[in-house]
Length: 97
Ligand SMILES: [Zn+2]
Image (tube, rainbow, N blue to C red):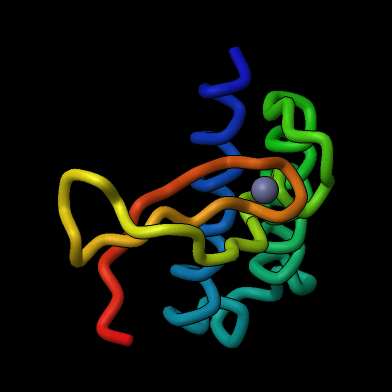
């Protein structure tokens, strides 16, 4: 259900962007419909993410994690383990530093 909503809202954004790029509002009077579509898509997408994701921080729920570098990965020495300061989500990434 929520996965479908995300697809629908993503489609809103995509469709609005296509309408903007195609400049259809210069041919047809759409009353800013492309911008409204994009805005509605972005707002809807954020709300569906807030409703489905369970992270404690609102920023984490929309995917904006605040990663902090931890220790090296035990299996791959070039990789570091990053932990989000807010929700504790972990990810591994290579680092050149
Ligand atoms: Zn987080």
